[in-house]
Image 1 (cartoon, one colour):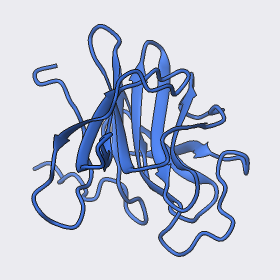
Image 2 (cartoon, one colour):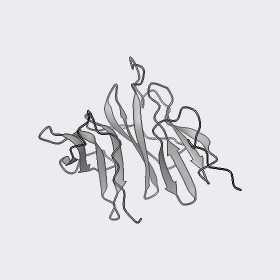
Image 3 (cartoon, one colour):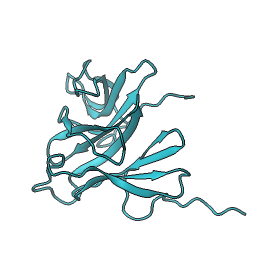
Amino acid sequence: MSSPVPNPIIGGFHPDPSICRVGDDFYLANSSFEWFPGVPIHHSRDLVHWRLIGNALDRPTQLPLTGVHHSGGIWAPTLRWHAGRFYLITTNIAGGGNLLLSATDPAGPWSEPLWLDPQGYDPSLFFDADGTCYLTKAGADASGQHGIVQYRIDPDSGRRLSPPLLIWHGSGGFGVEGPHLLRHGA
């Protein structure tokens, strides 16, 4: 009888996990809230045994935390890989808003952040088959309607390439969380 896979897959304080697969390797990023260094990155080959390989936000220039309250700071990162580069998008909820980093090696070094639209939270990137990059997050469209919005973005400059489109109003609760666009069957 085989042993069960642990749940959670990484014990301790590792909230809001985002997993990215590149070949036989899996990489996992987590929220780090008001703690420095920020956004721990773990590696695994089997989704059971994980090893910390670095932090995406390991320099004070990347992670302004002055005056951040408990549970402020970095919320819900999303880790993606496209065309030989890792991309990490997250929100510094207490200062600066949405930020986007990139690296060729998930252990680092990671770039200085590109500060995006300060409004919204839980941002997620999706790279389509043609290379088009979409940003999906909780936020507002151009008319001020709140819910899940989506727009095209240049991941290397952070420039928005289309207006935010409201794609879901939510289910009626206070706020919507954790939107992700994924390709079915890929």
